[in-house]
Amino acid sequence: MTFLERDPLAPQAWFGNLPAAHRYTYGLAGERFFRALKDEGKILGSYCPKCDRTYVPATAFCERCLGELTDWRDMGLVGELHTFTVLYVDVEGRPLETPQIVGLVSFGDGGIVHFLHADPESLVIGMPMRAVLKPPHERQGSILDIQYFEPFQA
Amino acid sequence: MSDRVAIVGVGWSGFRPKTPDLSYKELMYEAAVRAYADAGVDPRRDVDSFVTVAEDFIEGTSIFDEYVPDQLGAALKPVHTITGDGLHGLATGVMLIRSGIARVVVVEGHSKASNLLTPDTILAYAQDPVLNRPLRLNTHFVAGMEMHRYLYESGTTREQCAAVVVKNRRNALRNPLAAYGADLSLEEVLFGPPLAWPLGKRETAATTDGAIVMVLAAEEVARALRQDPIWIRGIGWCNDSPSLESREWGNLPYIQEAAQMAYQQAGLRDPWNEVDVAEIDDTYAYKELQTLEALGFCGYGEAGSLLESGAFDLDGELPVNPSGGSLGVGHMLDATGLMRTLEAVFQLRGEAGAHQVEGAEVALVQSWRGVPTTSGAVAILSN
View 1 (cartoon, chains in turn orange, green):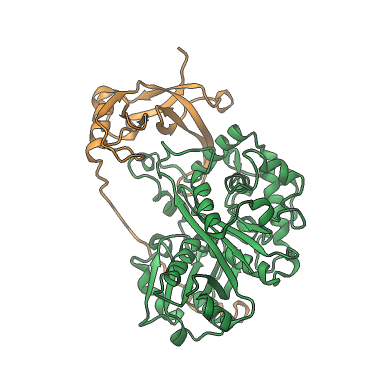
View 2 (cartoon, each protein chain N blue to C red):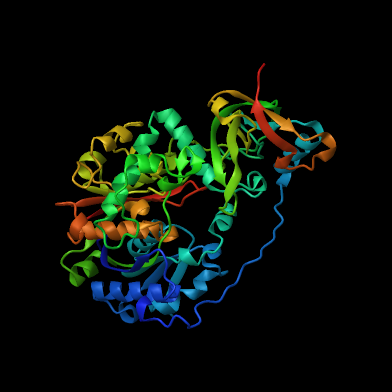
Protein backbone atom coordinates (compact mmCIF):
# COMPACT_ATOMS: atom_id res chain seq x y z
CA MET A 1 0.00 0.00 0.00
CA THR A 2 1.39 3.42 -0.86
CA PHE A 3 0.75 6.74 0.79
CA LEU A 4 -1.81 7.75 -1.84
CA GLU A 5 -3.78 4.53 -1.41
CA ARG A 6 -4.09 4.92 2.36
CA ASP A 7 -7.33 5.48 4.20
CA PRO A 8 -6.83 8.94 5.74
CA LEU A 9 -9.22 8.05 8.57
CA ALA A 10 -7.34 4.92 9.64
CA PRO A 11 -5.57 5.13 13.01
CA GLN A 12 -1.93 6.07 12.30
CA ALA A 13 0.26 6.03 15.35
CA TRP A 14 0.53 5.66 19.09
CA PHE A 15 2.13 8.56 20.99
CA GLY A 16 4.44 7.82 23.92
CA ASN A 17 7.43 9.24 25.75
CA LEU A 18 10.47 8.12 27.73
CA PRO A 19 10.66 9.94 31.06
CA ALA A 20 14.16 9.50 32.47
CA ALA A 21 15.80 11.02 35.55
CA HIS A 22 19.34 10.44 36.65
CA ARG A 23 21.96 11.18 39.28
CA TYR A 24 25.36 12.09 37.78
CA THR A 25 28.11 11.48 40.34
CA TYR A 26 30.84 14.14 40.25
CA GLY A 27 33.53 11.73 41.41
CA LEU A 28 36.66 12.59 43.36
CA ALA A 29 38.00 15.19 40.93
CA GLY A 30 34.58 16.72 40.26
CA GLU A 31 33.79 17.07 43.97
CA ARG A 32 37.07 18.86 44.61
CA PHE A 33 36.65 21.10 41.54
CA PHE A 34 33.11 22.15 42.41
CA ARG A 35 33.88 22.56 46.13
CA ALA A 36 36.68 24.98 45.26
CA LEU A 37 34.37 26.88 42.92
CA LYS A 38 31.60 27.06 45.53
CA ASP A 39 33.62 27.75 48.69
CA GLU A 40 36.66 29.62 47.39
CA GLY A 41 35.47 31.01 44.07
CA LYS A 42 38.37 29.29 42.27
CA ILE A 43 38.70 27.46 38.97
CA LEU A 44 41.08 24.53 39.47
CA GLY A 45 43.11 22.58 36.96
CA SER A 46 45.21 19.45 37.29
CA TYR A 47 48.68 19.18 35.77
CA CYS A 48 50.29 16.14 34.13
CA PRO A 49 54.08 16.48 34.43
CA LYS A 50 54.68 13.64 31.98
CA CYS A 51 52.61 15.16 29.16
CA ASP A 52 53.01 18.80 30.26
CA ARG A 53 49.26 19.37 30.00
CA THR A 54 46.90 21.15 32.37
CA TYR A 55 43.34 19.87 32.43
CA VAL A 56 40.54 22.34 33.17
CA PRO A 57 38.15 21.48 34.71
CA ALA A 58 40.56 19.37 36.77
CA THR A 59 40.45 15.62 36.20
CA ALA A 60 41.76 12.75 38.30
CA PHE A 61 43.76 11.27 35.42
CA CYS A 62 45.54 12.30 32.24
CA GLU A 63 43.62 11.24 29.14
CA ARG A 64 46.89 10.99 27.19
CA CYS A 65 49.11 8.82 29.43
CA LEU A 66 46.45 7.62 31.89
CA GLY A 67 48.65 8.69 34.80
CA GLU A 68 46.99 9.82 38.04
CA LEU A 69 47.04 13.60 38.45
CA THR A 70 47.88 15.00 41.87
CA ASP A 71 49.27 18.45 41.04
CA TRP A 72 46.21 20.72 41.41
CA ARG A 73 46.51 24.36 40.37
CA ASP A 74 44.50 27.55 40.78
CA MET A 75 43.95 28.82 37.24
CA GLY A 76 42.62 32.26 38.20
CA LEU A 77 39.37 33.61 36.77
CA VAL A 78 40.70 35.10 33.53
CA GLY A 79 41.05 32.90 30.46
CA GLU A 80 41.33 33.40 26.72
CA LEU A 81 38.39 33.33 24.30
CA HIS A 82 39.03 30.25 22.12
CA THR A 83 35.84 30.34 20.04
CA PHE A 84 32.23 31.48 20.35
CA THR A 85 28.85 31.38 18.65
CA VAL A 86 25.56 33.28 18.70
CA LEU A 87 22.77 30.78 19.21
CA TYR A 88 19.31 31.52 17.79
CA VAL A 89 17.39 28.44 19.04
CA ASP A 90 16.69 27.10 22.50
CA VAL A 91 17.38 23.61 23.83
CA GLU A 92 14.12 22.33 22.32
CA GLY A 93 14.78 23.93 18.93
CA ARG A 94 12.38 26.88 19.30
CA PRO A 95 13.49 30.34 18.12
CA LEU A 96 15.00 32.44 20.92
CA GLU A 97 13.69 35.97 21.43
CA THR A 98 17.14 37.06 22.55
CA PRO A 99 20.01 35.08 20.99
CA GLN A 100 22.49 33.50 23.41
CA ILE A 101 26.22 34.14 23.11
CA VAL A 102 28.17 31.05 24.09
CA GLY A 103 31.89 30.48 24.07
CA LEU A 104 34.80 28.32 25.15
CA VAL A 105 37.15 30.26 27.41
CA SER A 106 40.46 28.44 27.58
CA PHE A 107 42.45 27.87 30.77
CA GLY A 108 45.64 25.80 30.53
CA ASP A 109 44.98 23.11 27.91
CA GLY A 110 41.27 22.98 28.74
CA GLY A 111 38.64 25.57 29.45
CA ILE A 112 35.07 26.36 30.41
CA VAL A 113 32.07 26.46 28.07
CA HIS A 114 29.70 29.18 29.23
CA PHE A 115 27.56 32.21 28.41
CA LEU A 116 29.34 35.41 27.36
CA HIS A 117 28.00 38.81 28.35
CA ALA A 118 29.15 41.27 25.71
CA ASP A 119 28.16 42.82 22.42
CA PRO A 120 29.05 40.01 19.99
CA GLU A 121 30.51 42.62 17.63
CA SER A 122 33.09 43.45 20.32
CA LEU A 123 34.22 39.84 20.81
CA VAL A 124 37.42 38.61 19.17
CA ILE A 125 39.01 35.18 19.40
CA GLY A 126 42.05 35.40 21.69
CA MET A 127 40.78 38.20 23.93
CA PRO A 128 40.90 37.82 27.74
CA MET A 129 37.59 36.91 29.44
CA ARG A 130 36.84 36.91 33.16
CA ALA A 131 34.47 34.57 34.97
CA VAL A 132 31.71 36.35 36.90
CA LEU A 133 30.60 34.13 39.78
CA LYS A 134 27.38 34.09 41.73
CA PRO A 135 27.57 35.59 45.25
CA PRO A 136 29.02 32.96 47.66
CA HIS A 137 25.72 32.27 49.44
CA GLU A 138 23.97 31.48 46.15
CA ARG A 139 26.55 28.98 44.89
CA GLN A 140 25.55 25.33 44.93
CA GLY A 141 28.63 23.59 43.58
CA SER A 142 27.81 23.36 39.88
CA ILE A 143 28.89 24.90 36.59
CA LEU A 144 26.05 27.40 37.13
CA ASP A 145 28.04 28.94 40.03
CA ILE A 146 29.67 30.80 37.15
CA GLN A 147 27.08 33.27 35.83
CA TYR A 148 28.91 34.17 32.64
CA PHE A 149 32.22 35.40 31.24
CA GLU A 150 32.81 39.05 30.29
CA PRO A 151 35.63 40.83 28.47
CA PHE A 152 38.46 41.61 30.87
CA GLN A 153 40.67 44.68 30.84
CA ALA A 154 43.78 44.39 33.00
CA MET B 1 41.69 -18.25 2.53
CA SER B 2 41.35 -14.75 1.13
CA ASP B 3 40.62 -12.01 3.61
CA ARG B 4 38.96 -9.75 1.04
CA VAL B 5 35.39 -8.67 1.79
CA ALA B 6 32.89 -7.46 -0.79
CA ILE B 7 29.48 -5.82 -0.85
CA VAL B 8 27.38 -8.22 -2.93
CA GLY B 9 23.92 -6.77 -2.46
CA VAL B 10 22.32 -3.45 -1.54
CA GLY B 11 18.73 -2.53 -0.75
CA TRP B 12 16.99 0.59 0.41
CA SER B 13 13.62 1.94 1.35
CA GLY B 14 12.78 5.61 0.85
CA PHE B 15 14.26 8.09 1.15
CA ARG B 16 11.50 10.54 2.14
CA PRO B 17 11.34 13.35 4.74
CA LYS B 18 8.21 11.74 6.22
CA THR B 19 6.94 8.15 6.09
CA PRO B 20 3.60 8.17 7.95
CA ASP B 21 2.50 5.09 6.02
CA LEU B 22 5.32 2.73 7.05
CA SER B 23 6.61 1.54 10.41
CA TYR B 24 10.36 1.32 10.92
CA LYS B 25 10.02 -2.46 10.64
CA GLU B 26 8.40 -2.11 7.23
CA LEU B 27 11.13 0.28 6.10
CA MET B 28 13.76 -2.26 7.17
CA TYR B 29 11.82 -5.14 5.59
CA GLU B 30 11.56 -3.39 2.22
CA ALA B 31 15.29 -2.57 2.20
CA ALA B 32 16.21 -6.11 3.31
CA VAL B 33 14.13 -7.91 0.68
CA ARG B 34 15.64 -5.69 -2.00
CA ALA B 35 19.18 -6.36 -0.78
CA TYR B 36 18.67 -10.13 -0.65
CA ALA B 37 17.24 -10.12 -4.20
CA ASP B 38 20.16 -7.98 -5.39
CA ALA B 39 22.68 -10.36 -3.81
CA GLY B 40 20.81 -13.53 -4.75
CA VAL B 41 20.84 -14.86 -1.19
CA ASP B 42 18.20 -16.40 1.06
CA PRO B 43 18.63 -14.75 4.47
CA ARG B 44 17.26 -17.76 6.32
CA ARG B 45 19.68 -20.13 4.62
CA ASP B 46 22.73 -18.18 3.47
CA VAL B 47 23.37 -15.35 5.96
CA ASP B 48 25.63 -16.23 8.91
CA SER B 49 25.34 -13.06 11.00
CA PHE B 50 23.40 -9.78 11.13
CA VAL B 51 24.55 -6.36 12.39
CA THR B 52 22.32 -3.32 12.89
CA VAL B 53 23.13 0.20 14.08
CA ALA B 54 20.70 2.09 16.34
CA GLU B 55 20.45 4.32 19.43
CA ASP B 56 17.77 3.61 22.03
CA PHE B 57 16.84 7.26 22.64
CA ILE B 58 16.39 7.86 18.91
CA GLU B 59 14.28 4.73 18.52
CA GLY B 60 12.22 5.60 21.60
CA THR B 61 12.70 2.03 22.86
CA SER B 62 15.10 0.70 25.48
CA ILE B 63 17.23 -2.30 24.48
CA PHE B 64 16.24 -1.70 20.85
CA ASP B 65 18.31 -4.65 19.56
CA GLU B 66 15.43 -6.87 20.69
CA TYR B 67 13.33 -5.40 17.87
CA VAL B 68 15.54 -6.01 14.83
CA PRO B 69 15.68 -9.75 14.03
CA ASP B 70 12.21 -10.46 12.61
CA GLN B 71 12.08 -7.98 9.73
CA LEU B 72 15.58 -8.96 8.55
CA GLY B 73 15.07 -12.72 8.55
CA ALA B 74 17.46 -12.88 11.50
CA ALA B 75 15.34 -14.61 14.15
CA LEU B 76 17.20 -17.58 15.67
CA LYS B 77 20.39 -16.37 13.96
CA PRO B 78 23.47 -14.53 15.30
CA VAL B 79 22.46 -10.85 15.43
CA HIS B 80 23.58 -7.82 17.36
CA THR B 81 23.08 -4.04 17.38
CA ILE B 82 25.83 -1.51 17.90
CA THR B 83 25.36 2.11 18.84
CA GLY B 84 27.41 3.63 16.06
CA ASP B 85 27.20 5.00 12.57
CA GLY B 86 26.52 2.69 9.63
CA LEU B 87 30.24 2.64 8.83
CA HIS B 88 30.90 1.22 12.30
CA GLY B 89 28.35 -1.46 11.39
CA LEU B 90 30.13 -2.09 8.11
CA ALA B 91 33.46 -2.38 9.96
CA THR B 92 31.87 -4.93 12.30
CA GLY B 93 30.69 -6.94 9.28
CA VAL B 94 34.19 -6.87 7.80
CA MET B 95 35.63 -8.10 11.11
CA LEU B 96 33.10 -10.95 11.33
CA ILE B 97 34.14 -12.14 7.87
CA ARG B 98 37.89 -11.57 8.19
CA SER B 99 37.97 -13.36 11.54
CA GLY B 100 36.37 -16.40 9.88
CA ILE B 101 33.27 -16.34 12.10
CA ALA B 102 30.98 -15.67 9.14
CA ARG B 103 31.12 -15.84 5.35
CA VAL B 104 27.98 -13.81 4.63
CA VAL B 105 26.96 -10.86 6.87
CA VAL B 106 24.06 -8.42 6.64
CA VAL B 107 24.46 -4.82 7.86
CA GLU B 108 21.43 -2.59 8.43
CA GLY B 109 20.80 1.05 9.34
CA HIS B 110 17.63 3.11 9.27
CA SER B 111 16.21 6.51 10.06
CA LYS B 112 12.67 7.19 11.22
CA ALA B 113 13.64 10.77 12.05
CA SER B 114 10.15 12.07 11.28
CA ASN B 115 8.83 10.17 14.31
CA LEU B 116 11.16 12.08 16.68
CA LEU B 117 8.85 14.68 18.19
CA THR B 118 11.60 16.20 20.38
CA PRO B 119 14.81 15.70 18.36
CA ASP B 120 16.71 18.67 19.82
CA THR B 121 15.90 17.59 23.37
CA ILE B 122 17.16 14.07 22.69
CA LEU B 123 20.36 15.44 21.17
CA ALA B 124 20.90 17.67 24.20
CA TYR B 125 21.11 14.50 26.31
CA ALA B 126 24.35 13.74 24.42
CA GLN B 127 26.05 16.73 26.08
CA ASP B 128 28.17 16.23 29.19
CA PRO B 129 25.52 16.13 31.95
CA VAL B 130 27.67 17.90 34.55
CA LEU B 131 29.76 20.43 32.62
CA ASN B 132 27.59 21.43 29.65
CA ARG B 133 23.99 20.27 29.96
CA PRO B 134 23.12 22.54 32.95
CA LEU B 135 23.45 25.53 30.54
CA ARG B 136 20.43 24.14 28.62
CA LEU B 137 21.89 25.01 25.22
CA ASN B 138 20.74 23.75 21.85
CA THR B 139 23.44 21.30 20.77
CA HIS B 140 23.98 23.15 17.46
CA PHE B 141 26.10 25.53 19.57
CA VAL B 142 28.94 23.01 19.24
CA ALA B 143 28.80 23.28 15.43
CA GLY B 144 28.67 27.09 15.58
CA MET B 145 31.75 27.19 17.82
CA GLU B 146 33.61 24.63 15.71
CA MET B 147 32.83 26.46 12.45
CA HIS B 148 33.98 29.77 13.93
CA ARG B 149 37.31 28.31 15.10
CA TYR B 150 37.78 26.45 11.79
CA LEU B 151 37.26 29.65 9.79
CA TYR B 152 39.63 31.51 12.15
CA GLU B 153 42.44 28.95 11.94
CA SER B 154 42.15 27.92 8.29
CA GLY B 155 41.24 31.21 6.61
CA THR B 156 38.21 29.53 5.01
CA THR B 157 35.35 31.99 4.34
CA ARG B 158 31.62 31.86 5.02
CA GLU B 159 31.09 32.18 1.25
CA GLN B 160 33.11 29.02 0.66
CA CYS B 161 31.01 27.13 3.22
CA ALA B 162 27.81 28.39 1.61
CA ALA B 163 29.10 27.19 -1.77
CA VAL B 164 29.07 23.63 -0.39
CA VAL B 165 25.31 23.93 0.08
CA VAL B 166 24.81 25.27 -3.45
CA LYS B 167 26.85 22.39 -4.95
CA ASN B 168 25.33 19.57 -2.92
CA ARG B 169 21.72 20.61 -3.29
CA ARG B 170 22.23 21.01 -7.05
CA ASN B 171 23.73 17.51 -7.20
CA ALA B 172 20.65 16.27 -5.34
CA LEU B 173 18.44 17.44 -8.21
CA ARG B 174 19.97 14.59 -10.25
CA ASN B 175 19.43 11.95 -7.54
CA PRO B 176 15.93 10.42 -7.37
CA LEU B 177 16.59 9.29 -3.75
CA ALA B 178 17.37 12.85 -2.60
CA ALA B 179 14.61 14.88 -0.95
CA TYR B 180 16.26 18.30 -0.79
CA GLY B 181 17.40 19.04 -4.33
CA ALA B 182 17.35 22.79 -5.00
CA ASP B 183 18.95 25.41 -7.20
CA LEU B 184 20.01 28.00 -4.63
CA SER B 185 22.16 31.07 -5.04
CA LEU B 186 25.10 31.75 -2.74
CA GLU B 187 23.19 34.74 -1.35
CA GLU B 188 20.15 32.63 -0.50
CA VAL B 189 22.38 30.44 1.67
CA LEU B 190 24.48 33.25 3.16
CA PHE B 191 21.56 35.51 4.03
CA GLY B 192 19.18 32.76 5.11
CA PRO B 193 17.97 32.39 8.70
CA PRO B 194 20.78 32.11 11.29
CA LEU B 195 21.16 29.07 13.54
CA ALA B 196 24.42 29.30 15.48
CA TRP B 197 26.39 32.16 13.94
CA PRO B 198 28.49 31.91 11.82
CA LEU B 199 26.47 28.82 10.93
CA GLY B 200 23.20 29.37 9.08
CA LYS B 201 20.14 27.17 9.06
CA ARG B 202 20.50 26.47 5.32
CA GLU B 203 24.03 25.17 5.99
CA THR B 204 22.55 22.49 8.26
CA ALA B 205 21.17 19.23 6.88
CA ALA B 206 17.49 18.43 7.46
CA THR B 207 16.56 14.83 8.24
CA THR B 208 14.99 12.17 6.08
CA ASP B 209 13.52 8.71 6.66
CA GLY B 210 14.68 5.47 5.10
CA ALA B 211 16.48 2.18 5.59
CA ILE B 212 19.54 0.62 3.99
CA VAL B 213 20.60 -3.01 4.04
CA MET B 214 23.87 -4.38 2.66
CA VAL B 215 24.98 -7.96 2.14
CA LEU B 216 28.71 -8.57 2.69
CA ALA B 217 30.55 -11.72 1.67
CA ALA B 218 33.98 -13.31 1.77
CA GLU B 219 35.82 -13.31 -1.56
CA GLU B 220 35.03 -16.83 -2.76
CA VAL B 221 31.34 -16.42 -1.94
CA ALA B 222 31.28 -12.97 -3.51
CA ARG B 223 32.76 -14.21 -6.78
CA ALA B 224 30.24 -17.05 -6.90
CA LEU B 225 27.32 -14.67 -6.30
CA ARG B 226 28.04 -11.95 -8.84
CA GLN B 227 30.33 -10.64 -11.57
CA ASP B 228 30.67 -7.16 -10.07
CA PRO B 229 31.20 -7.30 -6.32
CA ILE B 230 32.29 -4.01 -4.72
CA TRP B 231 35.38 -4.57 -2.56
CA ILE B 232 35.86 -3.01 0.86
CA ARG B 233 39.58 -2.37 0.59
CA GLY B 234 40.02 -0.54 3.87
CA ILE B 235 37.95 0.63 6.82
CA GLY B 236 39.04 2.67 9.82
CA TRP B 237 37.42 4.41 12.75
CA CYS B 238 38.51 6.67 15.59
CA ASN B 239 37.23 8.84 18.46
CA ASP B 240 38.87 11.85 20.07
CA SER B 241 38.30 12.83 23.70
CA PRO B 242 34.61 13.69 24.08
CA SER B 243 35.44 16.72 26.20
CA LEU B 244 34.44 20.05 24.63
CA GLU B 245 37.00 21.62 26.93
CA SER B 246 40.07 19.66 25.82
CA ARG B 247 39.35 18.66 22.21
CA GLU B 248 40.83 20.36 19.14
CA TRP B 249 38.39 22.77 17.47
CA GLY B 250 40.05 23.76 14.21
CA ASN B 251 41.18 20.29 13.11
CA LEU B 252 39.68 16.80 12.97
CA PRO B 253 42.49 14.56 14.29
CA TYR B 254 40.09 11.63 14.71
CA ILE B 255 39.21 11.75 11.00
CA GLN B 256 42.91 11.91 10.13
CA GLU B 257 43.51 8.78 12.23
CA ALA B 258 40.49 6.90 10.85
CA ALA B 259 41.64 7.76 7.31
CA GLN B 260 45.20 6.56 7.95
CA MET B 261 43.83 3.25 9.26
CA ALA B 262 41.71 2.79 6.11
CA TYR B 263 44.45 4.01 3.72
CA GLN B 264 46.98 1.62 5.22
CA GLN B 265 44.70 -1.39 4.70
CA ALA B 266 43.90 -0.28 1.15
CA GLY B 267 47.51 0.55 0.28
CA LEU B 268 46.37 4.07 -0.60
CA ARG B 269 49.15 6.67 -0.58
CA ASP B 270 47.86 9.61 -2.56
CA PRO B 271 44.11 10.13 -2.01
CA TRP B 272 43.86 13.03 -4.46
CA ASN B 273 45.13 10.94 -7.38
CA GLU B 274 43.85 7.52 -6.34
CA VAL B 275 40.26 8.29 -5.28
CA ASP B 276 37.71 8.95 -8.05
CA VAL B 277 34.69 9.94 -5.97
CA ALA B 278 34.11 10.84 -2.30
CA GLU B 279 30.95 10.74 -0.18
CA ILE B 280 31.82 12.58 3.02
CA ASP B 281 30.24 14.34 5.95
CA ASP B 282 28.27 17.51 5.24
CA THR B 283 25.90 17.53 8.20
CA TYR B 284 26.97 21.18 8.37
CA ALA B 285 28.39 22.76 5.20
CA TYR B 286 31.76 23.68 6.75
CA LYS B 287 32.33 20.04 7.70
CA GLU B 288 32.75 19.04 4.06
CA LEU B 289 35.73 21.41 3.69
CA GLN B 290 37.24 20.62 7.11
CA THR B 291 36.85 16.88 6.40
CA LEU B 292 38.43 17.04 2.91
CA GLU B 293 41.50 18.54 4.57
CA ALA B 294 41.55 15.95 7.37
CA LEU B 295 41.31 13.17 4.78
CA GLY B 296 44.47 14.52 3.14
CA PHE B 297 42.92 15.47 -0.20
CA CYS B 298 44.54 18.89 0.16
CA GLY B 299 46.37 21.03 2.69
CA TYR B 300 44.71 22.74 5.65
CA GLY B 301 42.71 25.75 4.52
CA GLU B 302 42.89 24.78 0.82
CA ALA B 303 39.54 23.01 0.37
CA GLY B 304 37.50 26.23 0.12
CA SER B 305 39.35 27.65 -2.88
CA LEU B 306 39.47 24.22 -4.57
CA LEU B 307 35.69 24.07 -4.16
CA GLU B 308 35.32 27.51 -5.74
CA SER B 309 37.48 26.38 -8.67
CA GLY B 310 34.99 23.56 -9.36
CA ALA B 311 37.35 20.72 -8.35
CA PHE B 312 34.63 19.03 -6.26
CA ASP B 313 31.80 19.44 -8.80
CA LEU B 314 30.16 16.45 -10.45
CA ASP B 315 32.46 16.94 -13.46
CA GLY B 316 35.43 18.18 -11.43
CA GLU B 317 38.73 16.49 -10.61
CA LEU B 318 37.35 14.92 -7.44
CA PRO B 319 33.54 14.84 -7.33
CA VAL B 320 32.49 15.19 -3.67
CA ASN B 321 28.99 14.16 -2.60
CA PRO B 322 27.57 13.54 -6.08
CA SER B 323 24.50 12.11 -4.27
CA GLY B 324 23.81 15.54 -2.79
CA GLY B 325 25.22 14.49 0.59
CA SER B 326 23.27 15.00 3.79
CA LEU B 327 22.42 18.55 2.70
CA GLY B 328 20.78 17.26 -0.49
CA VAL B 329 19.59 13.74 0.38
CA GLY B 330 18.70 14.52 3.97
CA HIS B 331 20.46 13.39 7.15
CA MET B 332 19.64 9.79 8.07
CA LEU B 333 20.90 9.75 11.68
CA ASP B 334 23.03 6.63 12.22
CA ALA B 335 22.12 5.25 8.78
CA THR B 336 24.07 8.14 7.21
CA GLY B 337 27.28 6.14 6.69
CA LEU B 338 25.31 3.44 4.88
CA MET B 339 23.51 6.04 2.75
CA ARG B 340 26.93 7.25 1.61
CA THR B 341 28.15 3.68 1.08
CA LEU B 342 25.03 2.96 -1.02
CA GLU B 343 25.90 5.92 -3.23
CA ALA B 344 29.49 4.66 -3.54
CA VAL B 345 28.20 1.22 -4.62
CA PHE B 346 25.97 2.86 -7.26
CA GLN B 347 28.95 4.87 -8.51
CA LEU B 348 31.31 1.88 -8.66
CA ARG B 349 28.73 -0.29 -10.40
CA GLY B 350 28.01 2.49 -12.91
CA GLU B 351 24.38 2.60 -11.75
CA ALA B 352 24.23 6.20 -10.47
CA GLY B 353 22.27 7.46 -13.47
CA ALA B 354 22.14 11.23 -13.90
CA HIS B 355 24.78 11.80 -11.19
CA GLN B 356 27.18 9.09 -12.37
CA VAL B 357 30.89 9.97 -12.12
CA GLU B 358 32.36 8.59 -15.34
CA GLY B 359 34.79 5.73 -14.87
CA ALA B 360 34.70 5.69 -11.05
CA GLU B 361 36.89 2.84 -9.78
CA VAL B 362 37.81 3.89 -6.24
CA ALA B 363 35.42 5.58 -3.80
CA LEU B 364 36.03 7.05 -0.37
CA VAL B 365 33.21 7.08 2.19
CA GLN B 366 33.44 8.97 5.48
CA SER B 367 30.96 9.59 8.24
CA TRP B 368 30.73 11.53 11.51
CA ARG B 369 28.23 10.94 14.30
CA GLY B 370 27.36 14.62 14.59
CA VAL B 371 27.44 17.08 17.47
CA PRO B 372 28.63 16.85 20.18
CA THR B 373 30.69 13.78 19.20
CA THR B 374 34.22 13.24 17.95
CA SER B 375 33.38 9.90 16.40
CA GLY B 376 34.15 9.19 12.77
CA ALA B 377 34.89 6.43 10.27
CA VAL B 378 36.35 6.10 6.78
CA ALA B 379 36.05 3.34 4.15
CA ILE B 380 37.74 2.79 0.80
CA LEU B 381 35.76 0.84 -1.80
CA SER B 382 36.66 -0.28 -5.31
CA ASN B 383 35.09 -2.21 -8.17
